[in-house]
Length: 208
Image (cartoon, rainbow, N blue to C red; front, top):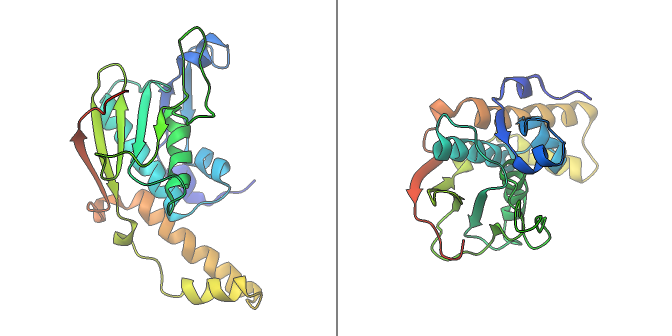
């Protein structure tokens, strides 16, 4: 398995998962996640997957500061419906990082370690995506504008040729290179695009 070289330069994040500790999946409950894990989950690396990873990691660090975030103890609320745009893809990445899940999620053990219904869509009062700590009620509102990091204009025609089955091997290679260049910029060139991701303190929602 060979990922693009820049994957190794994307900062990872260490999370504490109490369920993993109890069930022996990680003796100390500490699990390190990397961008490659999100790519494996989604099956591809695109601007949405990259932006979701960046948003999730940034929001967790904003909520926990220097402390290790506690996976499975965070609510995720999205303004968009599950079948709207890329909401489902973003939710998949955020679920990986936070442990939050929808109706099909883990129901818990004797009232503990529940993950079910902690990932919600079409939530009123949320303008983008809101992450909330269940222990303190502290939350952060996140908005992501990937248009601030545009792709190479050659990508559109090249992708069209690929989908039509008319692209040469060189054209396919060029498209993949240009596509990943944009993903790399989203993840590693954030200082030049500070307006791409916005985090602001939010208010805890009812019925957490």
